[in-house]
Image (tube, rainbow, N blue to C red; front, side, top):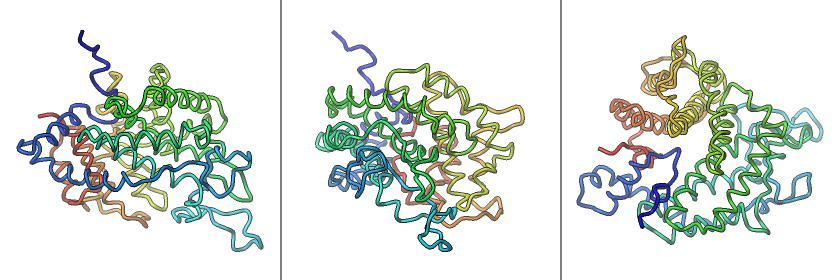
Length: 389
């Protein structure tokens, strides 16, 4: 008897399924035209996967001291841009210096979660595209150690994200750390289930963990507050809730979240494509690129549910596409505007423009992306987003 359709394909919301199958076929046939086109991206992925295969399991229990709860399994981070106050004898309370990252952040859970997300994403793609079972199983072990192991698994809350010494034990803004890193891991978990590398018992347990985290996200004062924000925090919060809801089988929750995205487009993107709330930040172009990526990923999820946000335009003329064009003009120098920027933002902008080029069917955006950064760091965009010819 033939398998039912849902089991024949991975259940994806951020990647293009046709693009992945095209890349897998190209990887399997070095003589094909698709392989010639994707060869560089496939080679990059192979090299990254080799490095990721050596990534040792990490856990929230690895930090030097537990959070105020006394439970090391509670996630904890320190606010990214806070520093000891030089005018205070003991440095307390710490003060914010926007755009200046405190390396003390690396001693908490944010950086390990970031590295975990990158490793799992790379290994899962390797498992799917190259049928590398060793990589797939290692990705599954990494997920198990961080989320599911009774001794090291994270508790389903974000109570202590972005704490500020001398001021507070946690803040609503800490949610964005998980919002940046959990959704891509869920896309990877879907791939690992499809390849058979994530055991069913772990897949079921992961859904149970995330269902409990979703309950926290729908009831705790921190997320209820951050959901109202009209900047990158609100955008990525919506992405986190919607992606978890889809993963645990609660599409009605995802639809309710995605229904408010048009309002956020109207509030955050001007008719000329600019994002004033991001452009006034110290790292204006990093945040502009990041927020626009969040909007594109929300549009991708919406598309799977039959909601077209890629083409949405407010009565005033604001749109995601307008934001893309504004960023393109900044990246190419066609828009000569000076913003505060201390970081190298062009590589991320090139990756986003490549993604948008595929989403909007615009080869000119792909060409611009390659011009801005020929060594596109997010080379996997070509593997995960390119349309099937």
